[in-house]
Length: 167
Image (tube, rainbow, N blue to C red):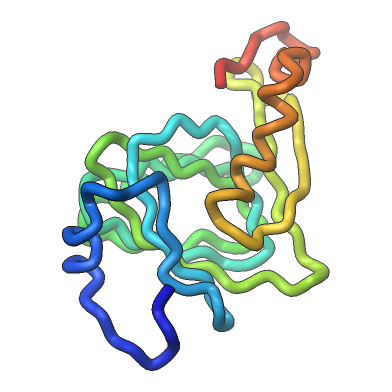
């Protein structure tokens, strides 16, 4: 991670590290903000509910940012150069294709704050499963949230319509 008050070229950093990259890399998290770069492809089916606002800046490729507003499914398609502010407590699911690179900024969580992850049925919208996790590490939080759902297939089966969510 980079220390405070040090400048760096984000695009050069990405280019220098393209061959040695996982799903996401944290730039900093030792301030009031967590900043990271994440890339596609991903296969997320969860919706993240963040206790603070979240900023998405699309660097390359396309981001399909699914979100729920008044219990209705919405979609924001971000192309390179687009920026999007996701209001706090809005369920959202960032889905990236191969070649998609996104810079994300979120506020650091207080000790009392947790993030919520939900999995709605893709057929009828009924909530299949929900869990709260600490968001100390952006990559680990999603993995922790998904672990129970992957371990128990019954949790991915809709009690209302019977559809099974493929993870």
